[in-house]
Amino acid sequence: MQDLILRPGPVLIARTWKTDGKHEDGSWHELDVTDRAHERLFDFITMDAAVTVGDIFRLLDASPLLQQVFRRDFAMELCAEARKGPVTAVKAADDSSVDERIEYLELYQEWNFDTSTRVYGPTQCLHLHGIGFELPEDSAGHGRRKGERIHWSISLTPLRELLPLPLLVNPEVQITEDDINAKAYGDEIARAHHANVTLGQVVHGVLWELSFHGAPEMQSGVMEELKNRVAEVDAGTAKLVSGDDLFEELDRPGCEALFDDLGGRSTREISSALRDIDDDENAAAWLERKFEGAVVVKPQFRDRNGREFRKTFRAAGR
Image (cartoon, rainbow, N blue to C red):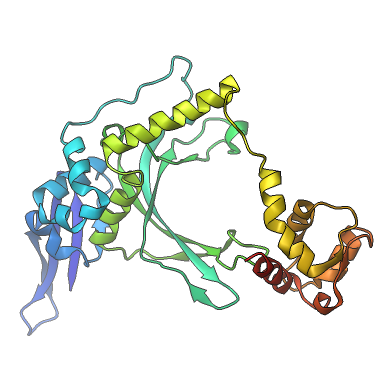
């Protein structure tokens, strides 16, 4: 029986339960394997509550082969940036609200499940986001109540600002609908508890999110480009494309294939309405009620339920 524990420092401990083979009594034996962490990537790990983001990068330095394993996630470049040490986030002059601060980073699990095929998507990847402090009062702007926490994307946040923050693993799993034709697509449909994550999953989860836009110098370029685009929008010099116009063309093939008459409605209006039909409800009957008989479905599609109708509609546009 073995147990892997990551403690601040970092110190990676392999705990083994040993007996003499003759009696049930035994004891835990601890072995420091920090410099051989690459040998333990597939072992389940327990994270000490005091472990920080910086400890992950110090572990990568203590066991250099890890940087080779995670080379595609810019491990070496991120480690070089982390060695410069932590810095405090630059705070805006008018930013005095606890709403805008992160207390810790959380590795969380989100599994996708297609209820039509009964198939799970990949379940091994851990995602990373920031968790704010408990709110002292309601935050209407963020849709959170007193005592709740705001979840923050950390995309393009400078790594050195994140290094001192605690890093926790959430064992609760959010299971979301993965069938794009289901009414609940993308919504949570169940919860599960899954505490067994490996050292490799933890390291990958941190590096994947922090390197999503490349190495630190590449991220700076992406941030500068985003700022330039925002400035163009604010100045009115950006060339903007209407989302309705874009989707109008994408929805047209489905409308032409499945409907005899749109009753003067736009293809975008029809497409948006389809998302509200319950999976098992007759789509043609629902549309007739919704549009008071003005929208007419072709006869060959009038027996299809909401999920089947959306699937056919989407297939027509391919």
